[in-house]
Length: 441
Image (cartoon, rainbow, N blue to C red; front, top):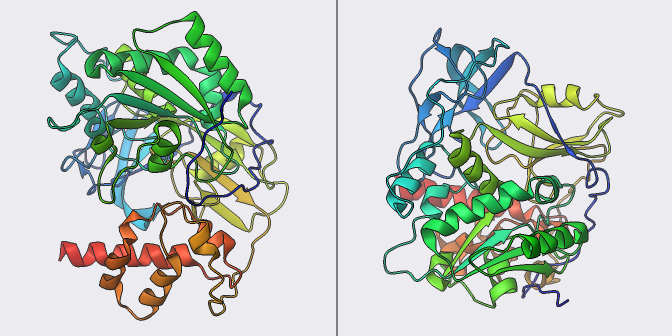
């Protein structure tokens, strides 16, 4: 069995997955209050279409997408809209959100039902339905799924890559989905294949998930499809699951700077996204739930949880039995690319793949760069991260474009490896925000 990987850069880091990798997914009932931030995607915030005092049902549209890169937001519980105002946001720190008080009746919107298309080859209707369902990439990037499923007319997409790498430490939700929701995963694949007609399908999985690799290989052999499906074991190396890295590792194709996977004939989607597509088409259910991993050395009972979007972090802590020791760090996402939280009053978003509670906080105590080159050696995008720090400190943000700052995938390896304890990733994120602010002006 040939095990593949990408280059340049990347490295082996401890994965800390033992706490939850063998724990089946459990359903969690939400608490009394749920928050639905209007920004849960890469585009501009959605626009509320409900108002305070209004009753809502499960699956009801409560905020409408504004532009192609935005996404619709639906209620995951029935209840009353309490208010629409600024609340803590797990990514941006603060943002407008719709506050719904759960009535614990869990009444479903009557119009929720599977779609009926005029033809199985009606790609436009299919993509439109996925857009209406508010489905975004569930690996964390939250890129709207309808855009990925609608390649430009001049592109020649022949390969569909399913991302099961899950290279972030602690996270095991995709691992469990591949083992427990295999039928739904391949049903989602069959649905997409019926519209886009790929010549080849690849499922990339890191080799620390051998049970998933063997399970999916057996499933494919027992349930052949009308397209070749190859289960590709990948070297356990971070960040193996980054889109361009995964494309190179599995196909040896290189996505040019500034281009999308379409340009090399590929589409990449997370396993959770395919399962969401299956549920949307078979049941008519919009994106109102997701599976995440709650882990770390502080939780009484680390778990893989299927949770309604909008559920508060504090309710998840209670569901996991509380803390065995006080956490010094609360991280939304994985510890490498995730965002530290200051409050437990933040909600689960569409892109929340994990919540990590850690008892140790490693102080940075930033010192001067010693030009060791580790950040360059390990950068999977082939960049010079130390230069972004120098430019950011001088407020020369625009000069960072000359060093391709937007090619940074924000994996965090530069910060992880820096002996001077410089928070390089923070400087890069600030630089990107400044450049985005200048473009908008």
